[in-house]
Length: 190
Image 1 (tube, rainbow, N blue to C red):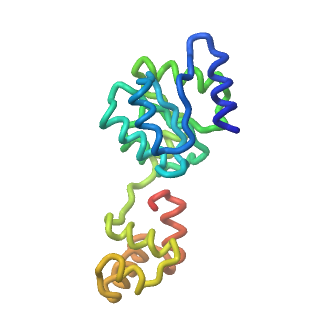
Image 2 (image 1 turned 135 degrees about the vertical axis):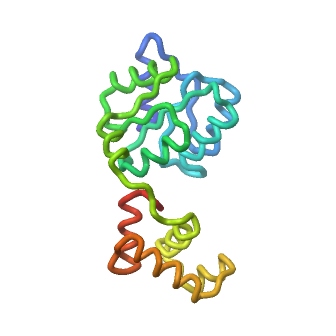
């Protein structure tokens, strides 16, 4: 419904034409390869493949297709991940229609567009202090896996997993594992 409304709004603009729309992240690259749009407007939260992974694929395989992330996830960590994925623009879904249309125009001519409030909050936010392995283990714990499950899945001993989780709690200055998961989730590190 939201996608349909956005398509309708953009098609009202005389200088913007929507050439395709997809419902899942795994269809973005094939559709972009077929139509070669100037700008791909991508939501972060998509089934099959998240929007940032799709944007990164577009950057690597079809660099002429610029990307504009449109999302309700306005957290600083999400903005940083989007910039790391080399997106050209980042707007919140609740932005006015004229702001979206102007962002599409700006991205199409090579400018970068990032909501100023989000850019400032991303700039002021610390980088994730966790190693990729620590993030992986914390993500598995956040998904309800036990220490034994994580150890078996990652081919580690349960003691090693517990050591990783203790290090995560210390690095995040958390009270316990649950608090560490909350901190990492709120910071958009998971």
